[in-house]
Image 1 (spheres, one colour):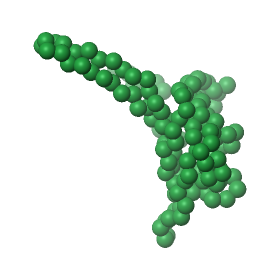
Image 2 (cartoon, one colour):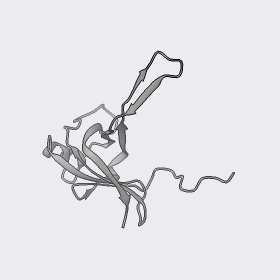
Image 3 (spheres, one colour):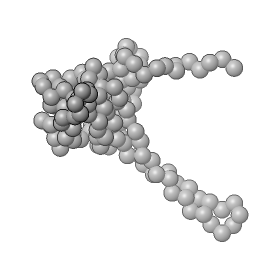
Image 4 (cartoon, helix red, strand yellow):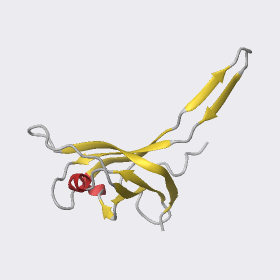
Length: 136
């Protein structure tokens, strides 16, 4: 069997939030679905009925805490509670997979530990469903 085509290491990504590129401040950017499955087991030996619910999504990000102009932490604080338009593209270039979605801005961390990078880690709720496509 030949190796699968399309496998890659996650690098050289593009993360655009409200038309500003923030990939140079992040070391993690991913959409995570939560898709509950309900199963009812009945009294017969092979009796089970399952149903899959609609997915709800979270946009997980982590990276540098830039608290200055053009910093994501600064932008998140300014937009707190508001909606942000996001385009996540795991590999730059044309013809690459993209996800476009809206998330809700939450307050990022502020400060940190002596001698360590100032970082932030957030799970931003996604409004509705992402639209998956291909970059132009």
